[in-house]
Image 1 (cartoon, rainbow, N blue to C red):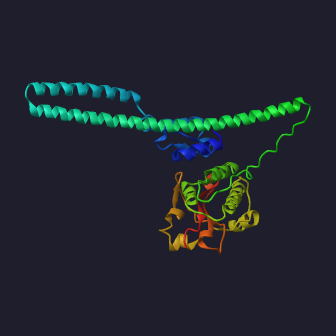
Image 2: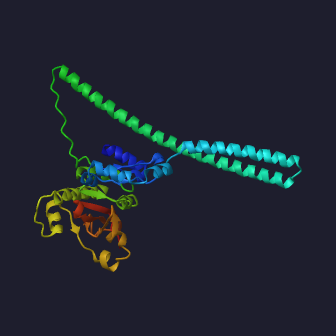
Length: 333
């Protein structure tokens, strides 16, 4: 799927985010977490090995756990009806025989059985409403895709008419991936920006869920500046991990000279004085690796705390990428 489709799915279902160039397996109802395979892992394993890896996972139980087993519901409903008939017969026999305790017991069991059936029907109704909501979202997405297809068709029709009339048609200039990155908006979901940056950088930079939440939770005063610094960092990541040998005596100087970003690779407050408090930053897990996001871009400095921007990232040379873990204000006062 394309980046826009992945973004829409990710916004609607946080557990179903599709890694750029990779894949995600989603269960019916999208209620269970989705196993994912990154593009790098997929390329390293090959198609056959990826299939083998996925088939070893508990697919059927997970699918049943996240979806709706309609066959089981039909069998269970039939069994409940039989049980109610049996209890009704038991209650009538007890009443005819003058067995008051037996009659009360049978009536009580009937009530319990009916309550269980009601609860099951309520669950089915809730599931149906959820499915209707999912279908409505899918319909809206299809409408958007239809509108885009109509616009594209109209464009080609116009081109055809121009050519038929003997007029030349200039092809539009290809859009620069970096200039097409959507601007960040304060206190809002940054996924569109993050995905576009990842796409433009061929995943030499990625963002954690913590990075997304850190931006959503603040009202940063200059989101355009933050966007530009993220783009500069991403462009640096592309060059840093392009596979070519290069001499970089000091990474912070190299970033400053070539990409105009001020980077601090160390911070004693994070790694020493507040080490335990900052463990979420200096020792976090991402896709099976333990990383350290102490390095950070100083977006703005020597300003009020709520204007002091920071982008914390980890250097993951083994996978040829930077892992951004915080996009927001300074992590301590």
